[in-house]
Image (tube, rainbow, N blue to C red):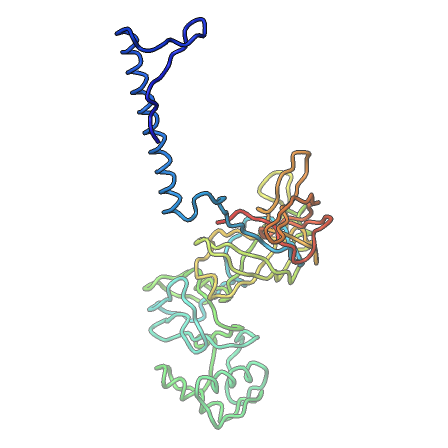
Length: 376
């Protein structure tokens, strides 16, 4: 591209001058010529740059493509929950009284689990042993005695490895006495062949020590509080507002958020039928207990937890992730339906919210329909 040989300026009356005869005119013409040349260079350079960029960048000149994240409309239950406060505890709290007289020489630590054949405490260095049975040991068991407590004793002796020859029945025979003596010998007890409450305590199963009522070196006397114990099954207890009683149904599944933030599953095992005065004046509560597994809950007694109770359930409905909803200018909500590379907004009617999803219905919304959601 070449610059023009001369640049003519228009006179005020529109006629062209004959040429740059005067010195001033020559200077003006020279400046105009230089400016035109500079413009030509700039334009040519810009064109060259654009051509270079187009050649080096294959995507130049193409429309920017944005990935679309989608989620499918699904059919299933949408469950709305409400969170209430609870506390982790253990079922069946009760007191174990001292059954032997003497000096306490050993006590378990709080939180200890005691199983069959293990000592609940030691008095005068002699163990008071836990055995499993439905009846308390209310009498001395010896040869010639019959009853359900005898059968429980024989069952425990067999379970602990004594009396392979023993028949488990309700009769305390010489074979029973022999097995008792073997057991007493191993524990350092007097080998009398008979059992009484100073040696054995019958409970329905393993025990967890929640409180120790006697100190080592203290004196044990019959009837004094020795231990406070519970079952070993962890339970969540909720003092539920009586007005929300319909949210707690025996056998219903719930979510429980533990102190460490972990959420575990639980099942409602009991719902109180009698309301009691709540902490707030004018309000009443009912007792709700929830079963957890020991492995999931840990071992923190009385720890605060959060319980998620079901407040509403929509069964077998269409739903989308909540983030798929769009607020419409004319009011209400819609979703952006995606079909291939096309998408359009469809108004929807919303229903139950829960679990990060929302029930939806509307024309053009069916199971499997793809809707746009924010990309992560």
